[in-house]
Every structure is written in C-alpha cells, then in structure tokens.
Amino acid sequence: MTAADVLLVEYPSDAIVVLRLNRPQVRNALNLEVRTRLADEVTRHAADGKIRCLIITGSDKAFAAGADIGEMAEAGPVEVMARNVQKYWRTIMDCPKPVIAAIEGFALGGGLELALCADIIVAGEGARLGLPEVKLGILAGGGGTQKLARLVGGKRAMLLLLTGRMFGAAEALSMGLVSEMAATGQALARAIEIAGEIAAMPPIAVMQIKEIVNAGLNAPLETALMLERKAFQLQFATSDQKEGMRAFLEKRKPTFEGK
Image (cartoon, rainbow, N blue to C red; front, side, top):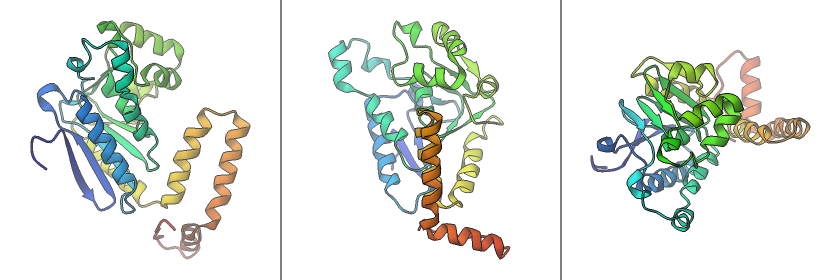
C-alpha cells in the first residue's frame, strides 16, 4: 500500500479488517475507483474465513463528503444508468459478515448512503450528516430516500430530504439513524471494540442474525418469525452451539470456531 491508494486496508486484529477511504484532498469524495475498490475488498474479506467483522471509515475530518460531482455533472441519464454505481453498495449490503461504519466529520450524500449500508454505525460527536442532493438539483439515489424513511419515519425523512440540511450525531442517534455516538475522534476506536465483541461470537449465529433481521424487516411478521424459527433450529446443527452451552454449564469462556 502507498499513500496514493484511495483505499487503505488495515488489520487491528486477525479477525477484524478496517477499510479506510483515503482521498483527503477531496474529503473522501466517492469516485468510481473508490467504489470499485471498496466493493472488491468487501468481497475478498467476506470470503476470508479468518475475518469476522469489517469496518469502513474515513479520516478525522470526513468519512465521505459525498459523491464525486465531477464524474456526474455533465452525464446524461443513459450514462448514469450504465454506470449503475448502486451495484457497489449492494455488495456491501449483501456481505454475510457484520459491517460497521465509523464516522468522523462529514458523512454527506453518497457518504451517508455508504454508511447506511453498514449494519452498525458509530458516529463521533462532532460528525455532520445529511443528504443534501436536492441542493444540486437531484435526489439521493443510492438508497438514501428509502433507507432514511424506513429508519426515521416518513415525516422526519421528508424534512431532511426536502431541505437537504445537515444534522449532528446526537440528532442522528435520537432518531435512530446511528447505533452509537462516541466522543469526537473515538468513533473508530469504539467500532474496533464492538467488532472485537462480535468477533468473539459464533460466526454462524452472527451471520444468521444479520440475514434474518435484514430479511425480516421487509417481510410480514409471520414470515419473519418463521425465518427466525428456522434459523434458531439450524444452530443446533453447529459445533458452536454445543460449545456455547457446554461452556455455560461448565462456567468457562467458550471458544467458537464457526463450525
């Protein structure tokens, strides 16, 4: 890796990978190269049996201040359709392993949409979030309008989307947009702590929890409960279930191997 890389890959432990956006000169604006590299690294680490949790972060000043406007300012609709940048976000959403976004500074437009692909969002207290696309004559097209409305409700989402205004981490936490707020400068450290907790859990159960929660949110309750029931039953075919329950009965710490 060199300082010129638009994405830095770091390993705070054998089980955790940090994918760090690295375009500081443009506040980590999301160009096609960044999107492609990020999707490729998520795919690679999703297939790595040693990795149990992924973290996406930026710098202390910006998680990602939005899409790279220079790439799209003069584009026509067919060109935009052909680029289909949304497919890169789908790769992150479909990652079978937990993904945590650690936000400091600005997470705007496509940057916030990227964070919303994660399962858990930790935001530093000084973070500034928003979907300001309306101010550019467009709208949030990477999942922003739909995810925001589902997370915070239609009326609150309308206010934020139609004005394009920024809001802070405390407000984001209060409306359920982020999972946790950390002290300014500590979002990544806290994300690594959470990732460590997750990495110590049984990997099959963790993957099943992620899958059924995401699937169940868009299914009728009875269907979601059926998915939960089947996933619960499946755990009894795993060695980790036997290890976890035996360790509990023997009053010792379990060792989960993902089997």
